[in-house]
Image (cartoon, rainbow, N blue to C red; front, side):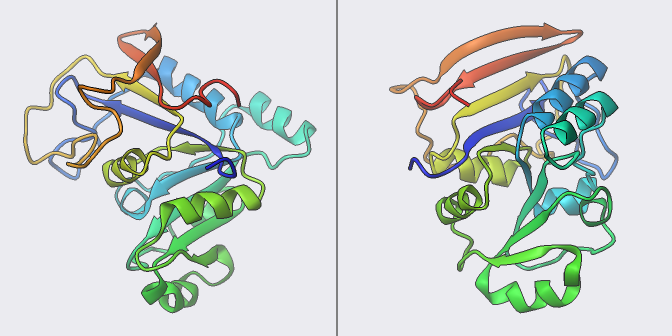
Length: 230
């Protein structure tokens, strides 16, 4: 599918493959060096996507943090931070969440058809609600984002969204950061769910880069022939 954004999946997980702990307390997996790398990647993207569960649980701002990087975007005629995108099936979103209130970037909510009316009533002018089908069709959404001017999309989770993009073969690159500890609790959230992935023992993903960042390590995987072209 040529008319979709170059799509980069970004994730940090524990040594045993978890994105978070089993409690509501936030688990910091990464470090300041990697946070700065992520900020740099964000600054080079047109949009950042997270699932609605991530909006609810983590309340992310999804902004470029470094003033120099924001200024560089503005000098190119862009907003200080990329557009924010989320996907929801039930429109259980708080209009006071930082996703909707922090920064002045465009906000897009791809919503299942059955919940579009509810989402528009709840969010009002804080976001553009787009009917994504029943359920939301990721391939169609990628096509729609491309025609809205998104050429480079960064997907920051959570696990359900990563699973959906990977099993739909809609990812060009995976940035996987490994934290130096174990979570050790099966109730915690893993990186991905069960599914039919395009990369398996008979079709191995290509490891393009390994980089140490303080006490964590970055693994960059090429997931399509488009890797490195954007």
